[in-house]
Length: 282
Image (cartoon, rainbow, N blue to C red; front, top):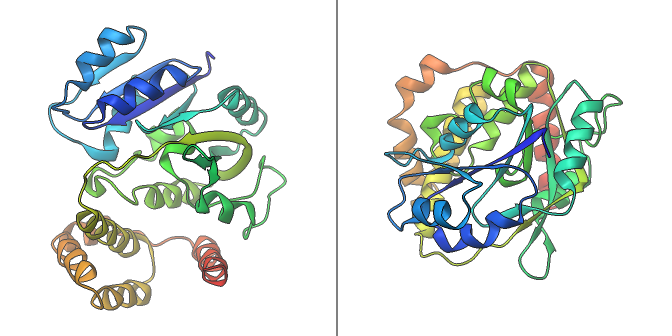
């Protein structure tokens, strides 16, 4: 598979990496987020074909940007340390992107756990609330799961990739908006399959919720109307995690004001249709 490179960003997940890395059917770049569990050394020893770069600090999702910059293929697929691209998915993705030059990102179907349960995000995409453009290979989307996306390398780099300020959790939404703002298509292609094998990892769920709320608020404030930004901030006050996330987001308000760019009206309308569809199915 010479047209696709798989970029994996990881932090302290050595055992998961040793299980999933050999399952990818394309060259792999591992960007290690300053792990302390010997991940980088273990991968170098077991899989010398994998290019490993260990960062001095944990860059979160932005570590993927480093991997994309290092890649030399026209397309890049993302994977987490607990996921892998199944079967000939990457070959299919390359062919689809070759045939659809206006598409910048493909989102795959995600099957979770040993029972291969369909991820709810994939189920939502399959309903195609935004329809299917004739120039795209599948239903249009305005979001994705990072572990199941294939992107055009040059386009990804041109829009800046994942925003470092968001670190992790919910980082995909802003990138999806920025790709669409530049006129690129994003499509769900269910024939592409990603297996996701999450395991309990001891990470603090409350801290994750706080970070997710922070990032959702920052993304809204950066791209959505002021009325929506105020509404979401007020809604965050209803829970302790929400208040903590709002506190963290407010600390970044000067940065938000410097980088705020409203979405074009047609994309704002599309996001509202998506939200209405999501609310209808719970």
